[in-house]
Length: 370
Image (cartoon, rainbow, N blue to C red):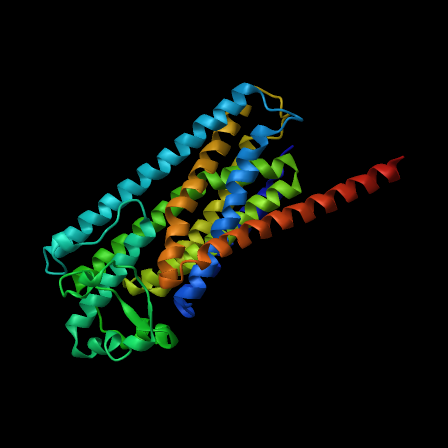
């Protein structure tokens, strides 16, 4: 059975977090503490979607999967992690090249470019940091952004040690927590052209990485929609939604700091929403429902896609979402673990509620039929 409407609706809903998050990020930026809580909560929710809903069925004794399908999911789970790592490495390499190119124009000394491999959002933060540092140097008024408010500031970026105060480093960027939006839009001088161009390139690479990640995610949504298990579908989509929301908020805010126009930011993330809905429809068309004991080639491809998506999502949590939450937390990193567990238990509880409701509905239907 193919459920195109269900697949499209759930696909668009899961990615609508990108559109909502980007709108919030460019119009009403949140404090780093709030972003930390949302990021950690979403990371815990995504753990349910990836580890529990994708890989846990492998261990079921009842309706046990064929060994071939189990090993396919094992193998492609590792492939998904490798694909994620390879994509991150490629994107980070391009970002590093852009940063080094910017250093040749005087933006920063190439030895002090703090671009960390395998964390796309930390790299974007570094570019946003460079824009703010360069803007501060380009105008005497820029000094007030980091000087007179040092005692009442919040960290937008994580730059490392005391060396970040050096003029040639990507300095630690600080702005008043109660005037972040004003700083981003009005108070901050325009950055030099080469620094802004480098930041826009970094923004596009982050967006491209998320765009590619959405491909297997949307296919899995289409597959789960066809299966007709509302609890599994709800848990997966809810986990993805809660992870996408703070991800888009943080990225959109830093993209605007890098000089990307607000409308362009919203359109970029909105395109991923449409793309995910379309991908879910394609997944529903390509993989109609079949028996779990099926070992056909279609079933193996379906298992490969699920394993690929699960591997990428688990890598996203450990490599990007939770490290970003710690970076946003600053000296209050202890809250990350609690918020992550809260997100995990929230999605698990919702899954149990949906399962119970579905069970009672089926029982009532069977009793009526008798």
